[in-house]
Length: 339
Length: 184
Image 1: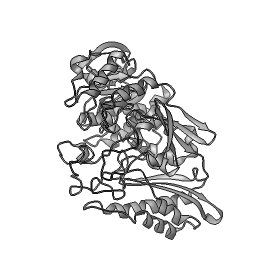
Image 2: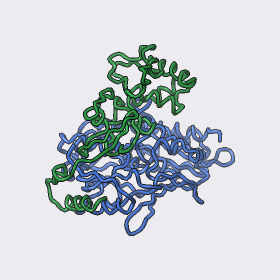
Image 3: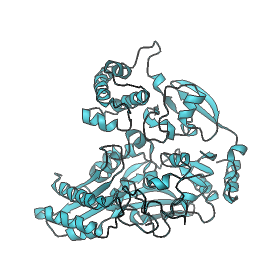
Image 4: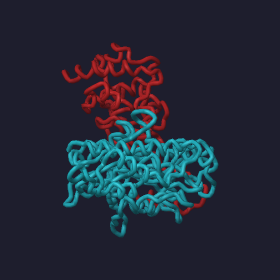
């Protein structure tokens, strides 16, 4: 690991000031000289791999009040410094099963005790070409250098939201639950807070895959807001992977349904993981289900639509079939939930 | 942040490549760790992980370095009663915390923790390298009440890999120890 300066932030203002001081010229947050340190499970790993080499780490773990989980007039507010394990078992999340399940099915018990919700949504891709600097071509790690994955071993890579510059899959699970439930993100900055839709947090790679979010280096995620909604209770997270536990998704689906008389879909909320470059909302599939009875045929049709734009490479075409089956099963299981 | 540290960060931000080496200018970080009940006042380079602090500075080599990237669980210790990976924790992050390692499980008179005894009784290891991490994780698994069934044990122990694949015996050991831990 390269040398860096370690600071423990006294309070939010000091953390934001240090971040601003170490922002670097025009760099996206991931390339800033100063990086926030929370659970450390992504950044210390990537610093050991020499993928990230900040000159300063700002330890925000002891900032007070950012780890609260609370009910609000319009739903739920999850503090960004809550640990995944603490959030997953919080009684308030019982009314949002897709959120709790997305957290419980991720990583390992040890990592869930360490990793925070804010860091979780910002975790970097598991693309092996990104994680190994001996590969020269990676537009995400070294802008303009090319993409070794396009014609490399790309079994784990994305089929949705890809570009000619990057096909790295977004690895997280929690983000799919957030995007499906129309969550918002509270962002702290020195001149005041701003709130954005979670769906607007991540950027598709396009021709600048090194810019992963709309955050600036001097901004800190403070909390996630999840609105209460009639579909939140009837929801689940289905994760398909190479081994049954402690593995990233090859395909996942976050589904929430509001069903009316006779199982007619009033509202459907669908997000897909493991198959896309960013947290991925499948709005076309949602629209196709509205007003329909959710049977086998309707579920299959929605899954078909969700992958209509898929662009596979040499080794990952199986993700289209796997993704469709994952979503079909998730829809049918969600409809069948007894709540 | 101190004003000196802040100006160091500003200076770092202003400098072109290559970045200055903070290690040359920064004093070592004073860190106080309470390991198995004993306080250690140490000074570390900021890069020192809790794992390296335990092994290289304090001399407790029971905690093992497997992958050093948070993928194998061999380095599992407890911080303030929670199981975590010491390879992805900076020693500085644990300043003031209570750390429990495999060396801290047995009683002062040498009597083994029920989980240690169960691993012996059930032959739950072969080469032994992953075992300290397995045992620390297993103790937490029972304390978290995640050892209700074999399936639950397997799920909540999935962060500890065993290259010898002693998994069936590890599950048996946890089943044995959990009843003894509840009695105790």
